[in-house]
Length: 142
Image (cartoon, rainbow, N blue to C red; front, side, top):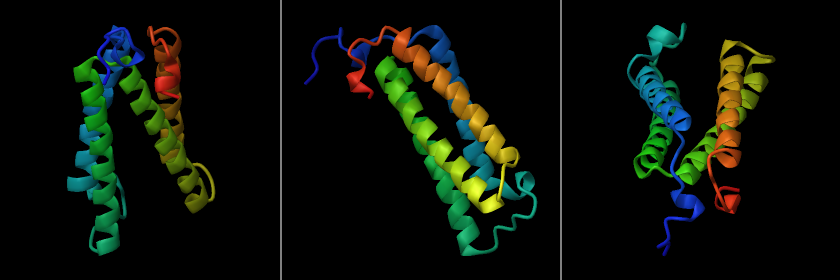
């Protein structure tokens, strides 16, 4: 059990990273709604008539909400290490989505470019948290 507040897990999140985290929470809630409640309005050609389409869209929405929940927990606990961990997992998932998009589309499209941009910003914030965010003993994250 961790009892000391001097460990990496309990280093406070810098304000810039907190603001970024709350932006990710709001954006995540919006995109979960898009995928689960209104996909036809945002993805031309999506009919949501087949089980496969519904399952794919709803499971993506749930995955987004899981990420949002993790970020909210990190922000609520004010834990730099937990936020860094959430960013690392999001970067991995987004780059996986980019790879799938490139393979399925035969090249880049607006979605893959957007995901690369988002992963880049998250990587910047991850590096900021690890090196500027007072994380001591970063082995907790890596």
